[in-house]
Image 1 (cartoon, one colour):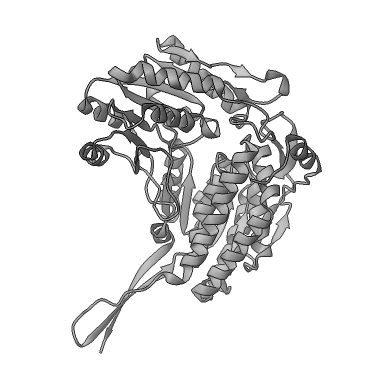
Image 2 (spheres, helix red, strand yellow; image 1 turned 90 degrees about the vertical axis):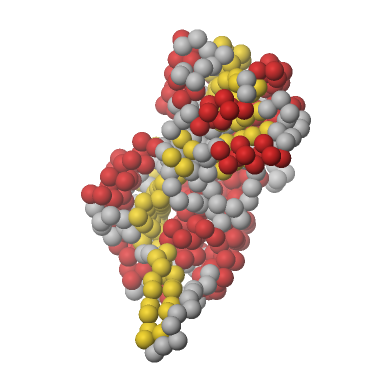
Length: 496
């Protein structure tokens, strides 16, 4: 962690000059002149006026990406040369790490420690991983008849539209952009309107790193306008999206209504976290459950928002989580001591509070939290919240809240726990705490989730894939498997 004090971060924030222009064809572009205010959730202050892009700006960005793919050098670079360019981009992200982390913290409310230590580390590591992987992807030559030669080549798909959310604005953008670029594709990136500024910095650094004009373009604007234009664009070959299930449905419709572009979706979650009475360390299980739901203000699609705990240990575990919630330091995101920052904005805070009100009215017991805090700051802060006596039919147990709100449900046997865990339209992630190896294997296989963590939560690295089942989406980010989303397999049969 960069060793700066709260006052030093505040001083840097005052000096930060943030540009809100699009980045298209290797240059900053103001677009048609329309702008919107990027507001910091830490204090409600305007950070910058950001270009409000629409169909015209998307057309310009897609045209630049198409030229760069069809006639430019990027897809024709030797894979090792593409890799070196991505490694230069990773180095630049590392060099500017403090500035970009500050931007992330200001625009979406993430604690500066998390922005620097987790968000920027993930972005740097992602570009390094795919930079190193670029020249290690091999084609195939299957054994065939003696008078024929068969070749199976992996070819870049073309122009990729990447639409990403605000909760991890650089991490998730990197998960889309880096493998697409490594494969030889060109990209039009649309960040969330709540977190555009760090993505614009990424676009400028890509140009500085030597990526040819048009290879990475960044268009800012809202989802119904700029996002829709990307989804419907006939020159976008692949669409990669992370966000809500409702918006994911729109992108599937856009593909059907345009060119049947391939659509890869990483969507919502209502992840179960099962604690069995034979958990190797109940205190650790409780502490990890608390960390998992309150980290990043609970604004995580993988957040373990449904705690399923055996009746015999439910009160002990819940008490430990409530105690941790009371100890958690909610504060200014620019204070390195802050453990939980601001929610992304007033509109989102209002939606989370509505879920809390509904939980109380439906009969769940509020154990702690549930109200705003730090109201004098002008920011969007919420106390960490825990409900128990939640039943599976309640809204708290069914809908993704995307905030620091934990629902505790109890079960009496393992079959009931698995049934409760799978009783959701989502299938992104799950957790399991047990000392029994057979139980760990059997239950992890039974859980309908793209990732299952056993005796931990949110662990892993770039070598393992990430994505969902059911209405949590399709395809995988991270790992070598992500390359497949941005390539086509071509068969060439040569008769000898």
